[in-house]
Length: 225
Image (cartoon, rainbow, N blue to C red):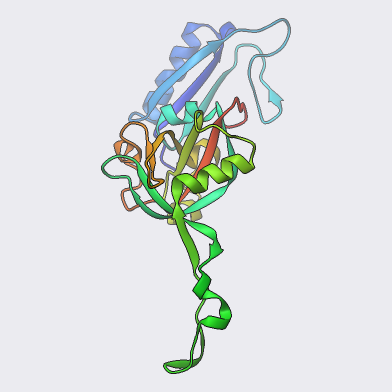
């Protein structure tokens, strides 16, 4: 799996020389990956580093290999998802971040099974019912309200980092490796979600469009990374 960035945590007791050696090894193994991290100190007798329920001993160094950009992985630690992902119907993420419509849960009034039979062209064929397409902003606001979040401020939009093929082949890790987060800047009168900054296109993501989005809210989530 491709490694685009490395997030490093080092126990203060390990010393600068150990950190330099670890960075040198990471540079050899992943020369193109961005690397950043911090030194953590011990509080009392508690070990400062651990992973998966296992606590590291004195002087440990923890390196997280991430498949995507480092900045969104760090931001992910302060966010938790809410609701279910929404299927995107229309969006423009190449020239900014605009998510116009999503597929709703209700069906079109004229697409009930009793109205989908065409007796002239195909009397034995029943077409599948069609779900309604709704404004992305209004739909996500409804999901946020149902989850107990009433304010747009502090809400982030997650878009998949990889394609469906990459996710199926386990080339995209879960959590921060699965979603790239972008701040919800504003909503147009029509209900289009406008992302802050250059959006996914600025990070080289969603070049062929976006299949789904996931809502996140700012809240510490130390298990995210």
